[in-house]
Length: 422
Image (cartoon, rainbow, N blue to C red):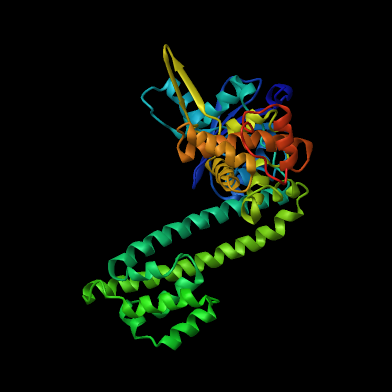
């Protein structure tokens, strides 16, 4: 039974949050009329308001807000009189449109609708139950790291575009541009003319200093530098783009250093969690994805009653829409994007590292699925397997799983040669 039905709350509060102020709607269980208030987003003001609510209503007080994390949530969590119920913003928006088809929006009205939702439909909402400090810290670290990786991708895309304008050859000389080697090369020789003027011994020393010691690769690169022909000699093109490239390289250096710092912190925090071994040994997980998978499942095993609950929440399970004779299956639009990204990215890594995963992926492609659809289908299957491992606190074992497939006569193994390790 849900907490809203089980608990006798002394009051129900809806909050429409904003950066500078918060609109509030208050309803007492024994009074049908609702009160409205506005408080500024200041720590002292929020604390004063929270203490006033405790003195007036006692505890517990149900609070509905369109957030599961953020400044207002963190401020309210300091006070044990509040039980916070996150309301999905899209749910509140649909509820508002049911009564206001014109889509007119007002902050006090949204606060009242939040109260109305948890009062009239208590079975739809679950209270916010924070996980351990260690896991919440790890969750923030892995998500922030991913955001910085996205920044790196944006910077490298811009850098590549700039270099194509005046110095395209340098992109052929290096396999990857998101490396300290490439950044240092551009910093030292930001134009082709400067690179061509460099002495051969100077170039060799530079590459050796950066641990690039393959003789054939080095000779090929040196020859390409000396024989390259400038795309343009127009200073009106070269000078502005040279400056832009140098600026982007500096940004890229900072971003690469930031990723290293996050990797170091994550490597210190993740292994301390009791469930980390369940994910660190998974095929293709590695130091980046194993912590993300740990965060994806969490430590509250009662949160998901079935694997299907997690598949649906993560957005990996497809959505089926039926209307008359029409049937439409599509991917889930409303879901935690980072969570879905975690499962899909990890599933892609298992294609070449797990025997059955590789075969399953190939089967999906042979059916006409696109790469993304095939990987999502693989992620869907992986979640079911990991869910059982997570519930039983038992690490995944590839050999045992293949034997289980064989006992069930799975079509996945028919006509396939088993790996020797199995």
